[in-house]
Picture 1 (cartoon, rainbow, N blue to C red):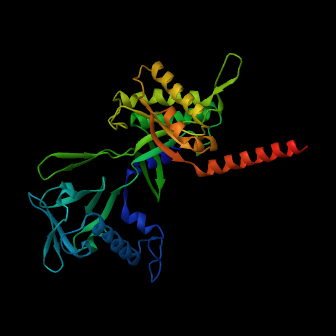
Picture 2 (cartoon, rainbow, N blue to C red):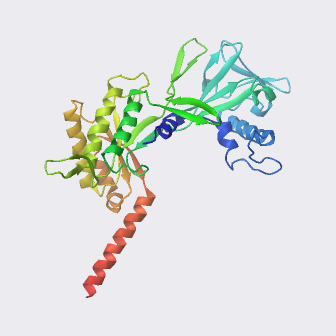
Picture 3 (spheres, rainbow, N blue to C red):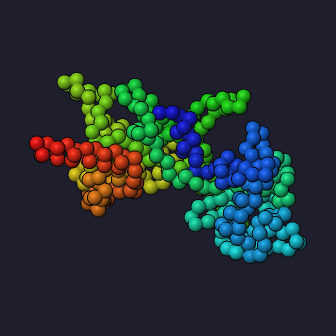
Length: 360
């Protein structure tokens, strides 16, 4: 329901390792390395050392350490580095280097692949960090949140029709790629929008394009919720799970039909997370519901993928059968411990009440 948070989430696929380390207790505040209002170069030095240790693990050199690199440079065959001792080294895995921006003689960024994820070295001799680094390395950008759940359920409070319109409107903007939010921060005003894809050039001259945004799932509400957004002929609220399934899928047609240049699914699918299901019968109901929506929207069967939230006792103890009930759609299983705790308390209270009545 909050456009700013939704945009932050979808853009979280890529983020600064330097910023992440600087703001957390992964970096000790001892010996003058406290987090202060302005940039603390002592803390910054610890961040850089930590991050370069990570580079030694992710993209190790044949000899030497990234701590000692004074220059990263390209030739037509591979990436080479110059070390502070005057030696040069290549990567242990030359295939880890994917591409660059800028020019071969002066790259602005270098991108690598490690365990299926990417990381980018950014060079800027004019930046506060880059001007103090012998190689002008100013940041390390890492690929992180491959998927993001846009929530219509627990993390929002959509209690009536007006609230649902806000949630659906933001989902529409995400599926069309035009959701924006004007933001004031630190005395500056700017517009936040969805990130573009990231383009690089390989040493062979090919263009390498990497997804700039997380793959978006949308979490519908559970089967038992109702909402006043639509009422039947007797003025009864309709099941909100059915409403969510239809409307969020209808909106996602913009993505499937290519109405946005910032596509979400590369496989022509819609991804719905389904929570609060109690056992295989309710999973089967969701599977049937999604099939009915596909028929209504003239979509091929199993276009809508299902993320099953394993957060209720009957689902957990029957998980194999729950998966089987939607076996053509299941895209992930996710355990919700807070909901499981509540369900355990509810079940225990019900059993205690039944036992007390039996004794009487």
